Length: 458
Ligand code: GDP
Ligand code: ZN
Image 1 (tube, rainbow, N blue to C red):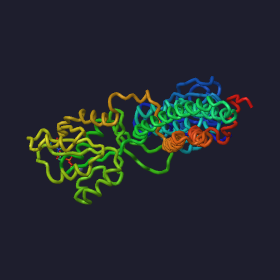
Image 2: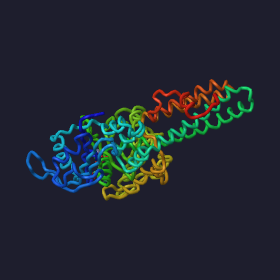
Image 3: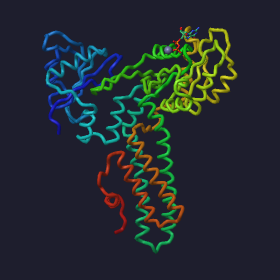
Image 4: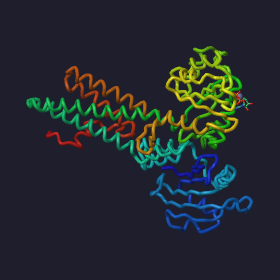
């Protein structure tokens, strides 16, 4: 059990109507109470919220108008006493509030430390703990929904269901091994094993398919804007940032001062971080050639290729098309306010199945269409994040891939009429790998589980 009281800003840093400074630990209520001008927080009921003022002890001045939520353990997120101080969302107010709380004796939480306490105190399982971490970093509402669903235990439940199915399969095989004289049992368990493993295989495949979108939601699409000089790349960037209120985040609690710029385009977070220096690239192809620029551009999830409506296509434009072949591209023909010189038919041909959008950024025209195209590129149709159980965590994705491999080994064995007890090894391995996702079974053996759940007649 931890003994000190930790604190941190628990809402994203940046714009926002309110911000929350959260405390957790044995002194949480006492510390808040010493700063609070209002009801005595040590006397109020658990899970109640109170209006009042925060007095800075060093100046005796009112620092903030706040709402304070008092939650006594163990019915809290960390199972410790938790206090949340809601204040106005500005960067200055919330930082000042945090400083006052720290001066009163709380310790600055390490990244994820609240979650770690929740995990250590048995409040949540590992995949839920990771979901909370994702939630902290969620950049858009969509991402937030995914993390919330996972925190709800959706992923855990699904994984548990899959493991249960594998377990049943193995149980049947065990029976089969013990009673080899029943031929029909053998035939049945073989059939059942094939259909069950296929089922589980498909589920895992589906999870991995949506994982790609999960990653986008969590990390943002690294986005490169490319085009010849003067076509309007900077204007495009400004338009996107301006229209969409860029979210500037410092990853809370970390010492690295990484500032990333996120633009939320209809639920798709574009990460305008300067990865590999290609955020806005004037002459990449000329500088390093088509092949090399392909390599560099491949690092981006999305490329916005800008052309000039008022000029004919040049060799440089054609090189850019070559460099982005096979990548995720939206083509933007800018400056439609100028007389048309560009051959739009040719542009559409070069763009193949990618969207071509026309804009006059100088008149703020076409930005809506562009945003629509970006969002449709990644969420075909009206995909509702809330309906899907996303997997957006790298560790989970790795484990799911391993599980898929183990299952495919098992399926191959069955097809090749391998002895069932050998096939079973792969199924068991899949079960173990899936267990790692939810941090279960650290070392309960499969057999123990079998005995506790099934009567095998032994
Ligand atoms: P970059 O070099 O590709 O980054 O292009 P800029 O965004 O810096 O724009 C180059 C010039 O084109 C600037 O003078 C812009 O004001 C102008 N410009 C941008 N968009 C448009 C547009 O839609 N129409 C016209 N006529 N000019 C534009
Ligand atoms: Zn520029």
